[in-house]
Structure formats: structure tokens, C-alpha cells
Amino acid sequence: MNLKTVDQVPENSTVLLRLDLDLPVVDGKIIDNHRLVKSLPTINKLLTRNCQLIVIGHMGRPDGIDEKYSLRPVYLELMSLLNNTYQSLFMENIDDIPAVDLALSQNQIVFVENLRFWPGENSSDTSFLKPLVDQSQAFVFDAIAVAHRPSASVVLHQFLPAFYGDNFIEEITNFQKILTSHHPKILIIGGSKSDKIDYLSELANIFDNICLGGKLPQFSEKLVYAPNVFVSSLTPDTFDIDQTSIDYIKNLISTSQTIVWSGAMGFFENPDSKHGTQQIAQALANSSATFKVIAGGDTLASVKELNLLDKIDFISSGGGVLLEFLAKGKLPAWN
Image 1 (cartoon, one colour):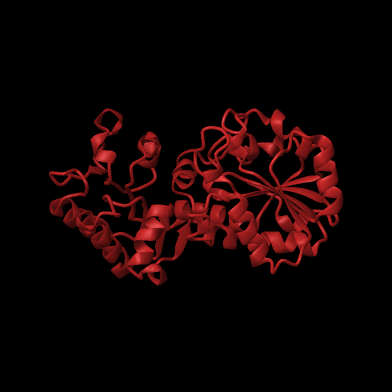
Image 2 (cartoon, one colour):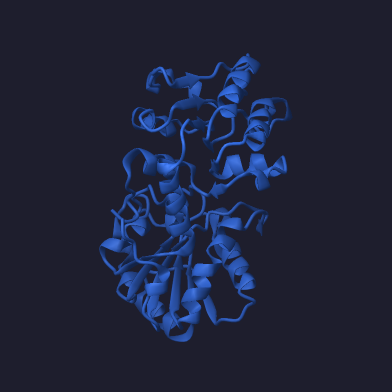
């Protein structure tokens, strides 16, 4: 894999910049901006090279235009992080080509509204982005969390010279490191999204042990039963894994040299359903493994709450994308 980096973007280019803008917003206020902060090095490199930026991304799963999912708070947060140094504009409509032309003629940063307000984003119909593509000389991708989804804004490398941001390159480098790291390797998968277990057959060939928790044990019709795949038993309310399963996973962790964890073991928001996640997190932190990785927003929140982030070697923003890369060795973001 030979991806061009943001350092190779020609100076003075108009750049269509795909970021991970799906930040948690409550009452118009951003609760956690770490995804935006991780892309600041890429943004600053482009601005230093006197590039003009068209920033695109999405938030949530809106059904059409929904003010609750507007990216305006994220736009304001980005401008604040950049010390409001640059002339900028928040653009709600990209269908009006003269308006797009005017915005780009007057601003160094044009920040586009939630792309999921347009049906073409989820249906992979790139035609709605043509007014932006036509104005751009380069496409820079720095949104690892959606790199496995063939959304319209993810596959624009098909139409423009493509470059990849610092955060994206760092993520892929560490994904590759998992493949070459020491055995025994354990993969712990939790959370509630059943599509994570679509990769079990391939992942079982990479890891010495795979342990499933969260809601995944309930998707019995999708599970792959192999000698190295452990399916946790759940508590009677099904909101957590039981103590026997916790002890089994902790024992595997203690003998592993590479540990990858994606997804909470239970309904972490409920204080009575944190036991599995807390004990697995503590076991991971105490482990002497040579490479310890956590992936996904829920896993990060869990470990952060327990003040154990300093015990982790790499923290990925993408749980699903990590599993797809390990299983398939490629992603729609460049393939």
C-alpha cells in the first residue's frame, strides 16, 4: 500500500477535505472534540501550504434535513481551535453553483453542512458533490472512522488526486502493526452492532483467541463457532457478561502479547452493567503485553472513565474500520 500523504499536496490547491465530524453534541455544545483535534495537524499543514479548504463530513443518522444534526457547532469549534484566524463560511446548500463559486472566492475555509442531509451520501451517489469536486484540485481523506463505508464522500479518490491525512496514516500504520505483532494475539469484541461479527471467519485466522461480549452473543444466527472463538455468557438481564466469562477472558489476556479490544462488554451507561467492561479494562491495563490497542468511541469512553488511557499503546477512532481492515486488508477509502 502506497498512499500519498498530506505533505505531498501541491501548494495553493483547493482541497476537498473529508474529516470525521461526527462529534457528540448536546444542546448545541460539543461534549468531546478529540476526533477534530486529531485532524488539526493535517488541517494546519494544508493551511500553511496556502491551500483553500472545503471541509466535508457528517453527523449522526438524520432522516433528511434535521437541525438537531447540523454541523454548525462543529464548524464553530474548528474555527475556535484555529483561533478564528482564517476567513471562513458555513455553507448549508451546495446545489447553488454560483453561491459555491462566491463562497470560495471570498473564504479560505468553506465548511459544508451535514452531508447526510442529502440522500446521495448514504446511497453512494457522488453526483450531488460534483459542484465541490469541480472546484477542487485535490482530495484529502482524514476520517478513519468511516473509511470502511462506501459513502459518496469516502470514495472521491475516484475523481480527484487523493492524499491522506496524518491521523489516517497513523491509524493504518498501527493496524498493520497488529498483523505483524507478537503471538499470542487476542481480539475482544463487544458493543451492540452485529456487523462486527461478519468478519469472524477471517479474523479467526489472524488471532489466537477471539472473545465476544456486549450484545454479540445474542446474534446466534451470525456467530462462527471455532475452537479459538469464545462466546461469553450474559447476566440474566443480558446487559453484561457474567463473571465466569469475565474470568475466562482475563486469563487469556494475562497470557497474550497482542491485545485488541473493540466495544464495551456490557451496557456501560448503566452502573449495574459496568462490571465486565471495568474488569476487562483493568486486566488489559495490568497486562505485560507488548502491544495493546483499543478501538471505537464506546471503548475509548469506557477506558477514559477508568483513567487507564496511559496504559494503552494505541487508541483508534474506528472500531468497525479496524476489523474490516484486518479481515480484508483493504478499505473503500482508497481501494
